Amino acid sequence: MKMLVRSMKVIGATSLFLSSASVLASGYHFGTQSASNQGVANSGAAEVMDATTIFYNPAGMSRLEGTQVTGVLNVVIPNGEYTNIKTTTATGKPVTGGNGGSFGQTTAVPHLYATYQVNDQVNVGVGVFVPFGSHTNYEAGWVGRYQALESKIETINVNPSISYKVNDTVALGAGVSVQYINGQISKALDLGTATKNPAFFGNPAFDGESEVKGNDIGYGFNLGALFNLSEDTRVGVAYRSKIKHTLEGDLTFKVPSALQSTVGKSPALQNRAATLSVETPESFSINGFHQFNPEWAMTADYTWTGHSRFDEIRIKSPGNADSVTVTRWRDTSRYSVGGIYTPNQTWTFRAGLAYDQSPEANDAERIASIPDSDRIWYALGARYNIDKNNSIDLAAIYVHLKSSSINRKPLDPTEVSGGSINGNYSVNSVTLGMQYNYRF
Image 1: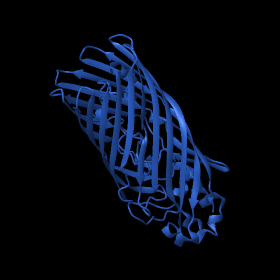
Image 2: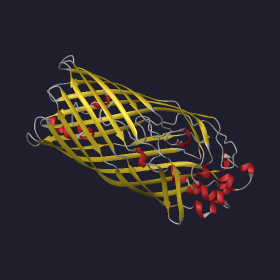
Image 3: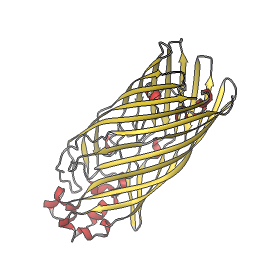
Image 4: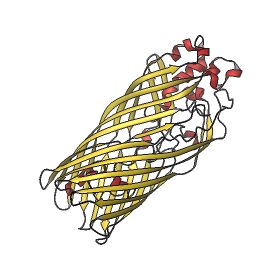
């Protein structure tokens, strides 16, 4: 029964918030909030293409005339496969089961932006976008089911912003963020081990299941500056703050009928409330744009993200000791470049390349619900100008994650009941972007 209690403590520890494998951007970022910038692998913040500059650099609004509205739809089509080597229960017995199938879930995500030019110096705007989000779903009965089954995260950030044009060289921008987060995770429970009958250890017929759901609203800010070094060259810097959340939710359980009268009566298997305190990481970006001639231009971006503040996941539940999952993430760097070709007033074509570092440093600290690794983006995009006030962007990104392994053993006493997981991951994705821009 002590083993059972430990397993209940660790249920939330891969938790509400950081529960899904992001196959677009590193860590748990959604990855792109603009189809136009997506076409240059997110390297185009200093170009200032449209109202999506609210997300990348609010100072860019100073270059937008009149009133502009942009609607974006991103569709992420992931493919993730796991191959087992040796996954064991808490007692060291090999877990039987499959490899989980293709665990990534196709997800469609909208974003909306609007800007208004108050006068020659001041612009205001608001963005409604998804900064974090993903969905993974392993097949029931896979070998890593005691680590994760289904994981889902959804966020919405409302970001009112303002820009001020100091002079022809310098523009400044700022915004505030109101961020809603909703998440859930489910996993199997090795209740057969709690019976102390070796024949039942890791037996799917005696598996239970837990599910955690929670939500919260947090607040932050973002700052930006844009410098016109010449008529053809611009440099921008932007900072987006961390946002502190305390997710409040419910922890619920399912127990197989064969165990209802025994382990099912354990206080550890009773539904209850749970909370998790987390901070989404801050980021700093520096980017550039240069127009070589009327047809050709290039973009570049460097983004640092403070993932290292996520060194553990700590779940609190009334009447229970904290459960802790050690993560030890590191800060990450992302590098991207892009090229732009504009043959005429109707069409603009874009291409980009990016390298995005994973915050997971090694196989021993990788988490089954976030099988992350370093990745490369290959991006293509195009804009069609319907007329002077209407345009459409289309973009596609292929993201290839470096093949990775997981060899995770318990790194905290509350992780012991989850056993160990050892195998290989192969992950990639395609993300499609569609965008409509209207100016009046």
